[in-house]
Image (cartoon, rainbow, N blue to C red):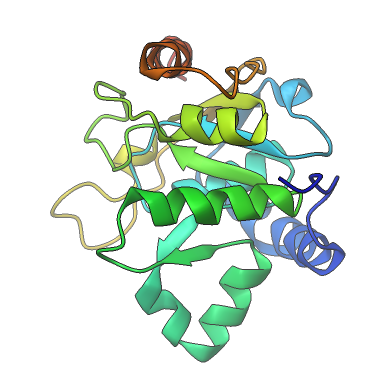
Length: 215
């Protein structure tokens, strides 16, 4: 594959910092009293796969804010049909995958974002969970890491499942804590399923241990 870029596009980086310091970070700290641990573990440049738990639609925005880098996430195809929103989420690094195209399309899109120097986010369970704990991690992140020789960065998001619980009509100002673990080196490109599973389990264990620390 082509040599990976060192950073995401400059226009995306500028837009990220503008929105972070004027909107996202003030709201996160004032309304959700956020705490962030382990920021020193985030690579300042170069592609990295950020793997985390997932319990809320707010998670991608919170995660990007707390690692101090734009983070590219897969987004629903429908969002790219809204003109203004399409421009905004593209600047944030969102990439679309059409429904029904399967996991291979998502993996190809994630690989492409890494080639352009993005920190690329993957929710390890592939979907939201009620309590933020990971019980059924998927192999996608480890597979992408092996294909691109990209390190994985485990991150725990605590408290977001209480922001908009099932049945609630409005968000709640519940405390949020982000804990960032140490980088995990990618598996060998020739790794078999058992090796990919071992890396996946290590990521899940790390995230769950960080999550168990709570507030």
